[in-house]
Image (cartoon, rainbow, N blue to C red; front, side, top):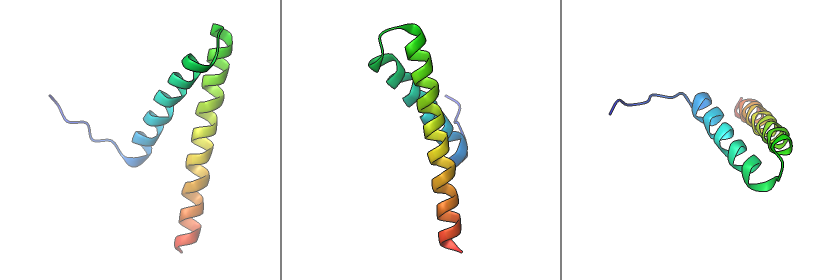
Length: 61
């Protein structure tokens, strides 16, 4: 089996995508609500990812 070499950003985005899909499927009833909630969750994950990344960058220097 080939090895996957993902950067930290790629792994975080993959995690955000998979979690958003699961949250959308599990929590909502209609397909439209699932899609909208999944996109909302993905946007929140990515926003938190970049926000915390900048916070760590600024706190380190």
